[in-house]
Length: 221
Picture 1: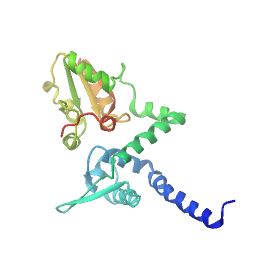
Picture 2 (picture 1 turned 120 degrees about the horizontal axis):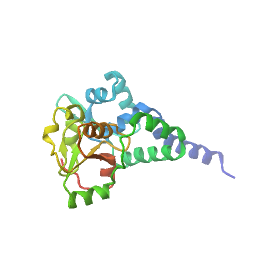
Picture 3 (picture 1 turned 90 degrees about the vertical axis):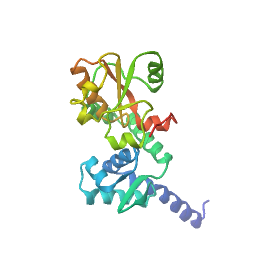
Picture 4 (picture 1 turned 45 degrees about the vertical axis):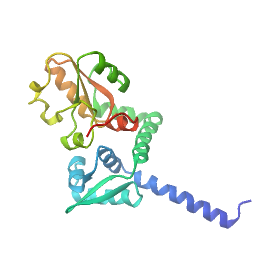
């Protein structure tokens, strides 16, 4: 039989585990983790990317920081936030995988948000092979600061909001493989739809930069 003291200690231990769960129990905070997985940002940048007010973004970041899921550093007058470690990125990725596997509503929400761009996306291994054997342009359609923080070696940076005006910078022949933040990022889907509408042979990477990093593949910065 467990002594009362042992029960109290066990409860205290599991309550500490729960601090992480509580910090993750917000869709908006998960979105902030998704953004910080691309590289460090200040509060204003996070707020703009997540479409929330600065005070709201700051409150969410403080919750994540109290659970030691994010860290900060000072750069002049700015406070920059980043994930506390690779294990936090892996936890976020695994959380999405578990939700996708066990919650039918996730798939419906995914299709509604991402839509269909036609064709089968390429895996990371297939992208390596295509890049070696055919004429392929790897296109990073994330915001410029995310590309600068780390990208697939050899990738061309054209943010999605500039793509329609910069099509001439892409070759007319060969295949274009677009990628963005991760498996649930809409930017690459929109890029493929835009490129195909202009007659380009475009497909997308099945996931994105988050999964690329977690696979320990080369990253250029």
